[in-house]
Image (cartoon, rainbow, N blue to C red):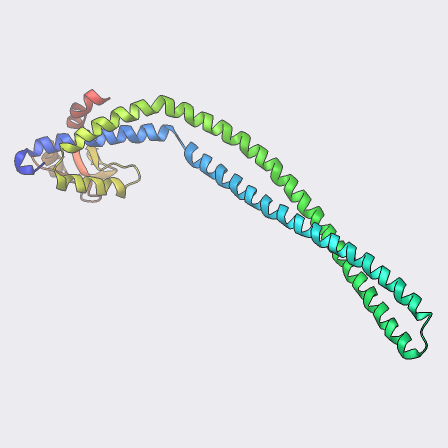
Length: 250
């Protein structure tokens, strides 16, 4: 809508109405509290634990394969040692005896390395087992928490969704009444401030937490131009006007 097609008074009314509807929508959303964020955090933690358990389980499987291989190595090495020791009894010279001795020593080293690996992996298996048990317990807790949080959120959504849809319908109509340049300024202010207030009321000589000079207060009450706060840029309207415009929305 072009400002040439409407009056400043109409624009002020449209801006006030839009602000009030946005404030009501913000309140409806706020009723949901931190539940959506809490649910997302719990879901992220659950997914992280599930991934971690998968990695630990794979590591456990790899360790078991390694342990079985080490046990086979020990059994194989012991068999070879027995074989070489029997061959030593039949050698004809020291050279053959020494060669078999080296083979026996190599197999003993092979056994020692395998036993060390088994000992080391035993500790890892025990640690991983405790980690998996802890993760499983936490996953059960998370599943219970998620169920409760989702039920709470569903209850809130059931009671607020219809109201939010009604307000969004009103907002669409209210937005269509605001001139484009004022609407752009309004949206910038909405994004700038955490409370989402682009339009503030003049009350007891102040607006949005800042004092308003007496002469400016007079101009605001005249309602013949859009007056921004000198400190914040927010649009100021007198409280009586604000309440008149929004009386049907309360």
